[in-house]
Length: 119
Length: 110
Image (tube, rainbow over the protein chains, first blue to last red):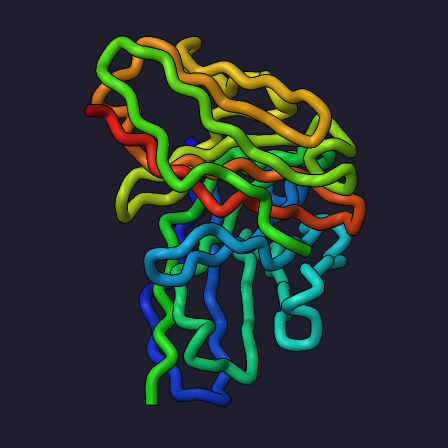
């Protein structure tokens, strides 16, 4: 069955970077996109960006351009989300989600990774 | 890019029908039929409930239905059940080639 399994919780200081992984299985990794969405405590969902796994090209929501880097490793069927220059307001649960190209919906999600920014 | 507007909460009794609205602009909800709805139970990942306005993924109950008129999309839950109590988020693909989410609606089963 399709699975997206994310790495564990992280704690970082302001100004640091964090890299979260999303290990996939149960489908052909290169034929889907991976999107990243975050949710601050008690808040709604916020779209961050996506990576085309086959081509490796990525697209970022305007708010995250410059600080967000999405990558993938096709040998391990894992996608990565790296967020730099962390601020307190980046404290959130970060989700990866899968999209079949040009379907515009996220049909499977990872379990989420809590990133806490604290001094 | 502003979040799509949703009511903070909608409630109903078991067996009743409720509708959650999602209002955007001509640059997102009104632009394409790529409107989706996600259900999120507490401390769980979101789950796709509706895509392309009114299409249900396999396994989603036919008690859930979707529609759109202009810049407003709607999700209707009929025959409300206890397990339907959750947060619901709409999302739309926008003219900036990115996605925008709604602020979320808490559905309460009285």
